[in-house]
Image (cartoon, rainbow, N blue to C red; front, side):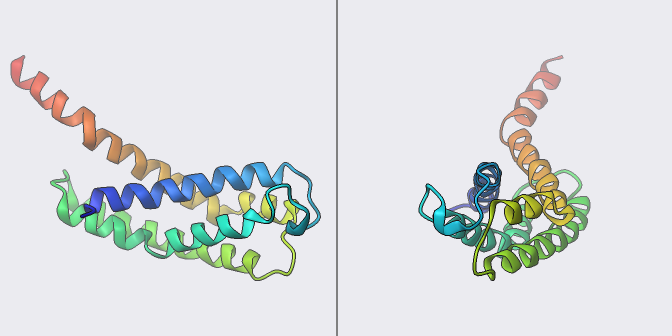
Length: 147
């Protein structure tokens, strides 16, 4: 069974992976996705990104409900920001997916979108929170108790 933490981690990883692919795709200078060396994988990556964005807010909410986070009210408040940024980025991703051809320039413009940038910043912040909660905090508490 997947824990809320694992599910959230999977969502974050999917967003980060798609963004890395999008950066590489944008650098290729392709006029359309049909001529891509990867056989049009950009649509697959954008589809995976869209799927991850659809459930990102819920995944964070489940994580906050399950974990013993410090300041849960701040986490719940951030949930609204994360869900809003994910919804806006999802709208932009779906717009790109709705085009007949996906050029490198179109993906570059999507990468530069403030909506996607805000989402990525949120994702990196949550990713770091997971990292800290998963490793540093228990060790720091143990160290503080010994001092």
